[in-house]
Image 1 (cartoon, rainbow, N blue to C red):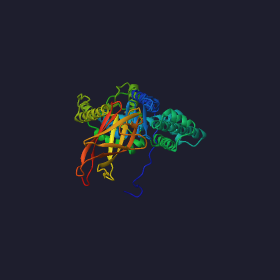
Image 2: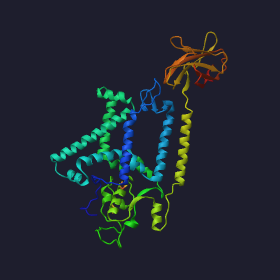
Image 3: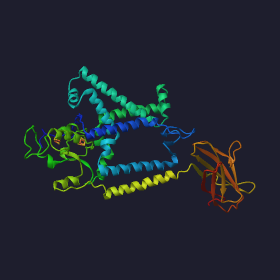
Image 4: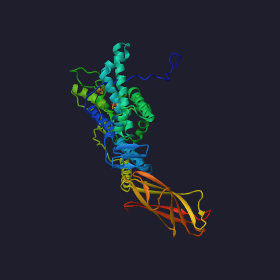
Length: 471
Ligand code: SF4
Ligand code: SF4
């Protein structure tokens, strides 16, 4: 290699100006964008009646009280396994969808794709389509250029702000927070979240765009592990398309392929690749090149589908004159479906058997026991009563497994083991003593039993009664 021709270790990323396109997949993308954005922005305003002592926001993550509400489902910190189950369920659903339909998540549903599409649409409305935008960006800084770019960035920032504003509504009562925002009366935490999310949305969807999919997203990297020869991918039918070349109306198609080398498929691509070079890691399977090519095929009176969603197996069998079908039932998809059924079933079981009362007992560590002047042995415990109902309740505590045990509640006022009060939707903590006339040589298992005054809910907890050091 000569000195005049050094290897370039850094190549500047070329700016992509995706061209607008119409067609089936573009329409589908608009519908998905409309539905997903509507769900995102409107969900915090949905109400769900849980009674007077509980929040009425249908979806709420209440960080202050460490609880999450999803319509009829309520998750306490002790039930975080439900959230884990939901996340596993979502991951397996994504695995199965990827294995069947390829990068369907990336092309249609991912937040980055949805917001990027929205930002590019704004850019297109203000600055024009591909060629106009390219010309504007490469041209001199005139008043026209400055004003168009400024307006685009202001709208991007407004979208970023609305995105951030909607996000914090999921963690607060939405109408109250909006009212407080309008009065400029919000906490520093809310302000920091809104500011940082506004900026990250603006940067990710306005500047980083397809670079996020290509270099930052971990899912983009490992999802190829879920692909096989029966996964739907975006494919260019080389057998039909080659040899490519320009074509004029009236020219013969004899001895040449259907691709007229118009580059329409490249111009509409949001990640700026040429799908005719084969499947590439950058391809998010958005289907826009299919729309672009189908429109061209319509113009030159050739069948659609030169670029299409297809499987490797089907494409190869077509070359040999076969008709391989789209195979849904494969070892991989059956495994995923089984895991999905197991996790989904466990989650339904956990939710169906969720209790509205929980008792937790913690034996005092120091002292482990004391011997009273009467000769009785006394143990101390901290009990936590989780009242998951939306009503204030009174509970009765009893203990079994030790004869003649007396329960004493260490508390101000006239609280005793028969009237332990716990407010709705909260945790009641009491310190209690159990005294019994037992031999110092014996330590034993005991069972605490808690029943609410209506006898509708009860909970047990196994603990120990210590009467000798080194049990
Ligand atoms: S190659 Fe086609 S499907 Fe892939 S990202 Fe580009 S336009 Fe979308
Ligand atoms: S849009 Fe179709 S015809 Fe035009 S370059 Fe792409 S593959 Fe060839």
